[in-house]
Image (cartoon, rainbow, N blue to C red; front, side):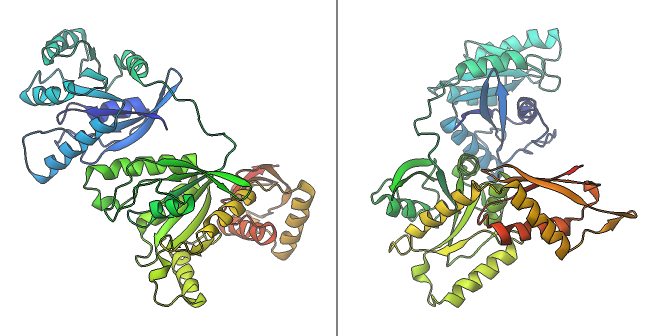
Length: 436
């Protein structure tokens, strides 16, 4: 995983503006009113050959005890704990304040790089005024203007220099990675322990115990996998505890790292918006996807019809994702847990599948006879040629006249027929239509 850089400081010093400057787009909300950044935002930055995560925290108010400022303070403390480099942002227009002194006292106690960033230095006069912040006790400071980018290059040079060395990849790159993701307390760590046959992860009834992603190597039959146990997620409206934001960050990273994402649901809790978000995220990054209904031992009626009802309920919530296999398991009793690996292996193989071009074009000819392409603007749409340009994940390219006129429902028809004919269970398909 990439290194993490957090931006901390009192409210209204320009942290979100600096964040936007570092990640290269306007992702954080920027507003003059105090307290706009309540939850953390995160993005990725690339500089001098290094990619690193950037965290934008809420304004730090150490002494105010209302709910918002208490939450902001909580966020900052975790940002400090979890970061590799901390950017302490102050404001030359306001000068040194008691809040700055309070924050600096905490930051000087950290055994990690802290870079003092004096913001709003838009001209030489402001830059000279910024030197008063040496009184906060840091050996070096950086005068910048987040709005127009003055000084941010030198700051990024120092950030990259301060990052820990990138660790060499210990795992064999060819080993397939399976990530277990889902809300807190659905049994991700219990499933991983059951598969590994020992207590590799801490299992507890307290949601949020798994803070970091845990990678373990597993030999199953003649196959070897890397299993990734990620931190649990909650609905965004409930992100109150400081752990939760980093859990979200790490889960998203694990999805990007994995070949197959296993979304674990508690069969007694159902399926919610956070689960849907995970599926959409996995689909966006073209990962293999499996849904595992855990705690099936607690379901009173375990008939096939009940599982079918679960499937219909989930597919109804995430239409267009009916290609995702759903299995029922019990991590506690070990019932059908091997099915997770069997289905994941099937999805890995499906993801690597390559359809020969002649076979694909024969297929296209058949479905065009089954359902003719529409006429648009007086012209008959035609697909002249199709080929699979990539596998793992699969990408298909179709050459046709006026591809911009092809209606979405016909695209869905092609994808559904592709799946009927060639499978691709649990695998998102990318289809590209180009002008012939």
